[in-house]
Image (cartoon, rainbow, N blue to C red; front, side, top):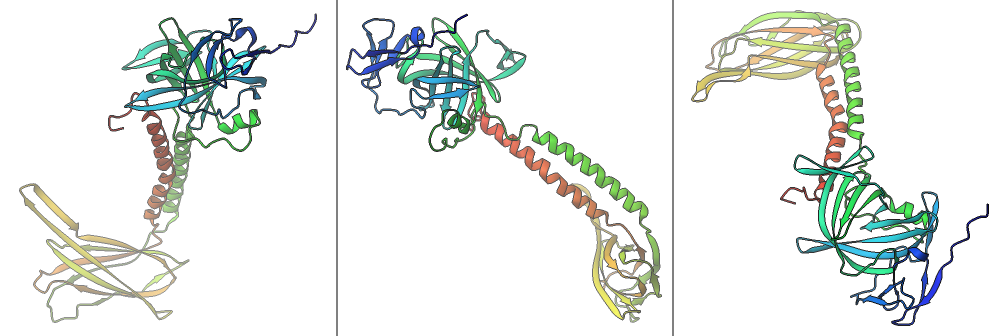
Length: 428
């Protein structure tokens, strides 16, 4: 069996300006646009009848020059056509570029570009199934569901090269886009037919590499409708890691709590009368802290009612001759008003002193109150080796930061995507 004959291009001249033309799409080409005078010619007419001649406000230079060849999905394609199309939304015209690629054995495919966002597009031979899901249409194709993104009237605004259809500047179609990133289903409807295509988002750098273009691809602007989210799956993954670490933190907290001695080393019950002539301070009996340096918890219990008290403590290490001073205020008020009963503060207080070394200690307690206040009864309890559970709560809150941040970024990305759709909030 002999090998297929290599395809041949066809050289012609523009009947309008005489410029040379080359037909690369062979029998598939129906129209060709002269790059010199922008005449749209009938490629099937032996005399190249002029179908349309348009005046462009400015010449548009394609990012991929016509005639450039490159590999797309392993096959070599040549850029033979270029058009600019646009839609008008709120009196603003948004345009994008479409590059027609041709391989004599594989046929046609397209590259579309909008503000640095590229899609590899092929025309579908089988039609998607379109239905309504609530108030939003959806399209199903090969088991995948695509959500409706927008419907608009698209107009051809500029053309160059050759095309397998009767291209016209000013031609309008009703375009519908359905997205399931990184893919997008699009339909174009005219009075005669509806054509469906499937696009897949690709980075501009891949286009530059495939066609060996000089320099770097323009950086994308904004978020395109089928641009894959860099956070897809990330929030779920990060939340799973958070739950695992939280469970591990809970186990550590439970083990720490179980291994802590929580040994009571001092208990005392005292009373204080404001304005009394007696000494207001109390010196406790000496007590001993044994073992490694660890936390000591001070628990203060009072019978205060609608009053306050301030306690000045001095913890004296008799072995080292060192003292540690700190103060705590206890206040408790309650009552009722038009909104009902209320309370403020409480009659008890707890404070944790970290890393107290072993040794013999006594405690000096100096309470203060308003001189007209009623006498107060209070008790002091010291416990050694009490775990600081607040540290575990702080650690849990810190572990929350990555999943919350990642989830926020993901939601923000999707919000910006759909902010450009027909379903954007009215404020957008």
